[in-house]
Length: 413
Length: 155
Image 1 (tube, rainbow over the protein chains, first blue to last red):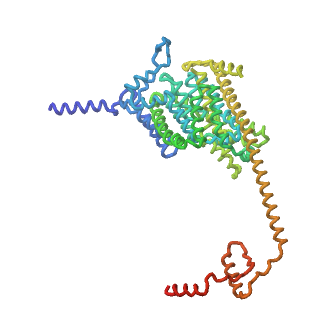
Image 2 (image 1 turned 90 degrees about the vertical axis):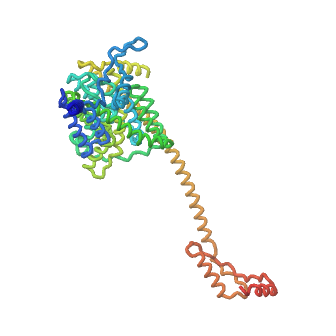
Image 3 (image 1 turned 180 degrees about the vertical axis):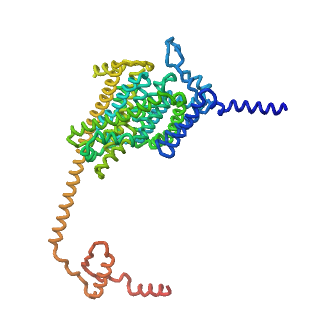
């Protein structure tokens, strides 16, 4: 009898300690909803091909973090230690106890340190740089203007977020979604948002990658609305060939100018250009292959799954996340519109030599945004190839969004 | 440049604490204006520098290309002149004389040699010219030839 009683007690204890019991605890229903949401994102990634390389790890991180009692990620570890006194006696109000995380953290806590310490986004930029050809931008430097204009979406969305009464950190983190650059969004939000903020890095990343996947749906109507048939039909001339030496000078020049002008943009721009220099040098094939493939893939897994882990129920099932999604689409649309409008201005200034459609590619999202310019252009003139012309603003947008991130980080701190 | 850097540093150092909520119209406007201006200034500086070095490289490339082109043209001219000279020489040269054939060599022998030569040069684009036919003198004396025949007969 005692054996049976002991057996039943053990079973009851196991049931109480199991994750299933957690679903019936206070607020446990939210975890069920989050797990269901993670299934939706998994479906979108696998079946619909929405940015699968990042959305799938993010959605699985979301699943792991919402499993009751699994304790793979602890949001409380990332709270700033109040009034922490440095050795010199100065008070540091942004101190995170990494020693505690290393000693008591779960797997995702340890991996999340790479996000919080801003290690992963610059490494992703290294891989992007090693894959990017800046030739079209060097051949047509005026493309930089379109890349700059498309960043307007970031700053105008900042206004919208401020009007909704959000904190400066939330405003900057949501606004940067307009840059259509996932690593940059993660970089800014991980630096600015705290556990006390109404949003998390995960919700910002989720919105950014969702909208990046929706570029083919969001951009074309705006492009058609803001341009005339005549403007869309402009066939642009061929770009001049760019020598290897020019391509070698470019990353060094950009690093020097941008990093000296806005030091807070140095990690992103510096690593982007370092990756590009490796590629253009022609003498570091092994490093280039590693940056493009192995390193990029490893970081993508770490980044995706840990960012997904920050999407805890109380952060996603909230009005704040609704605001992120709303402002995110506004930021994206405004960025596209700003690029197109400057493209129209350049069309007038050059007496019809520039097709304004390439302006929308200024919102980073490489190379999807450039492909959209090409596609919409070919709807009017099937033999029109705008792709290489759109790649200029597209890669300029990557630099532009990194600069905009640097500006936001310099102002909000 | 120094004034610009100072102004930029002043703008960028006007910090907003991350937790501040009521940002106010003035603060928001300053973020927007500063942000857009700095992005444009940074990228315009890059446009100027990239355009500048693009022009320098273009002129260097154009010069190198012009030099190459001039060299190629000179070479082509030289080649054309040589060809023309050859043509003239060909035209000026008298019609190929009949081969000098030694007495005792029959017409059939000359025709056979000519036929063999034509076969050898067929497809090479070259035209063989037979200038003369001479009967070679026997290398061995009659006695040594008889000896050689004697010794090699079994084979």
